[in-house]
Image (cartoon, rainbow, N blue to C red; front, side, top):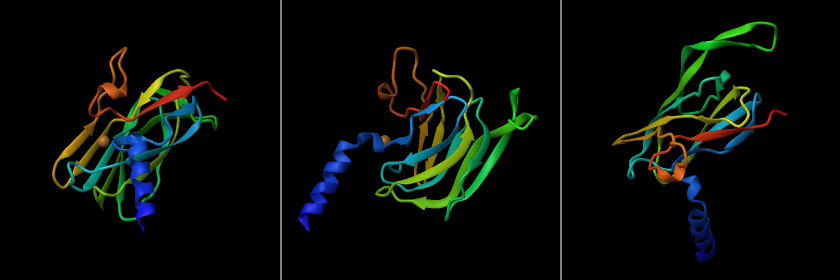
Length: 169
Ligand SMILES: [Cu+2]
């Protein structure tokens, strides 16, 4: 029984990126449909996560959170600065600005994923940020830091999950 445990420890050590709150896929083609799979890797100093709020970057549209058993999911709508084509001859004038999951209880020793489908803006080369506030029974993590020029997420303690847009396909 020692062998599987040792393997597990190695996996954990080899995957530091799995901690924090991050996106599973950090690159996607501009203007494509993208499933943001938000991974919550730990609680707040051992305290369980009970609420997760994610802000959607400007330019994302057709936002649909995936229902999640055990969690209530809510959305807050915002007006778009620039209306965009809906792909069916019309215009989209508002979108979801924030998705909130609550009512669940994610223990620190577990991880979980929270998914949102969206269409990405047509801005190849841009980096989009998805600021997240992770509320725990005790304490909070604000994953909202956006790197300054010349710095990377590694230079910050609580970096916002980021997605790089690659050329349109
Ligand atoms: Cu972390």
